[in-house]
Length: 541
Figure: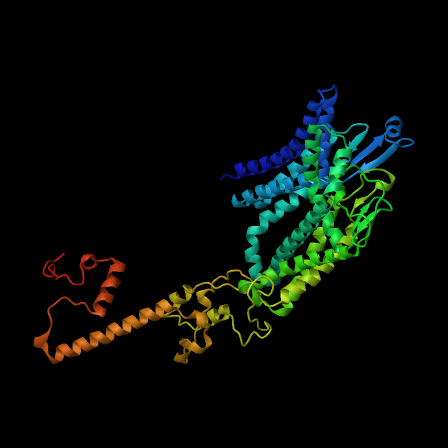
């Protein structure tokens, strides 16, 4: 693909991400507008609502100013000014998916870096233009937050997706970081599953409260459908809230109101149906919910104990667990900044978890669970228990790669150089394929000819090739039978059998010639059966 065309496709991905993010809230607002009979001025408000919602999903913020008449109608005593900065993370997830897809295509076209830069800049420019056009006296998007948020939300996943194909080579050189990356993926999946489990249990227990909030909103059928889709857009936010609640910090619902495992103290809440999942009162048994994220991180880290990645040294496993826990804590803090924020004046100045406390809690759960899961015997929680030796004792239990390296080092330069180059690549302990050593570095000593021979005792058992053993045994048997036949012919030349030779040696030679296929005689032998007379013996092919 030409470079210019690939860059054009990268720019098209940025435009597509912007259009999809704008289209979904626009359809929802247009549906409500049409259901109300298309009142005058509703089209302009529909476009602004879609633009503001999309900018919020990118981490932007809206400066809201209500005049005295509007504020009094809402129950305030005078003009009100506040900041709205909570992201509907369902739309954020859509942008992340489109950005990662475009970055992978740019990497496949060979323009990973330029493609990510072009698409990210274009996406941020589109966000800035939309922010400027959506400004109105009552609601004004904050321009710098819109541009910065768009660049981060689009650029970070695009960069990760672009460099991912190169992480395999990087992991070969830095095994600690490779193991840490595997732990991050495993424990992140465990935390996500635990948050979904906690949120699902809350939905089941609080379904009555959720339905009562829906009924109190007095929505028509179309409004109910739009409200339902808006709750789906906020569902990832509540997953982050469930993570903060189950790890200890809890969720703040305005000043003086909070919901934790120790108890719930709530005041008046906004009309958001999903707030019905928040448990009421105090129940000591809710403390058992802390076991869920611990099991999630333990199972996630224990997943690396399967396969060839299970024999990492103990110190490396502990270091990888610490690094992975730090990365997960930072990611959790960033997600909280998107999932929480101000939604109104005074007591609604902050709704959601506290970023700092959530980071510390996630780090603690991930570290403890990661260490426990990484040091449990293989298959202890998720499968069959295997005998697991201490991986610090590397000398007694030599890995396949070490045996392979020794075998390559002992190969003679003159006779076995090609065999050394064709040695199969073995997986290292962290699951990556190691490149074959350069044959030029495989030298043997000329002083002692025994050094050129492999020491069978130092080679791992799985290094022995069964096919090669069978082949060697076949050749040895054929040579022995041929030698016996020659001795018999020398002793009794008049009794030589003129029938076609069907010995093992003959069949071995014919099969070798058949595989080569270089001569017409080989073709003749390939089509001739063993019990068929050689009627073509006197014909020169």
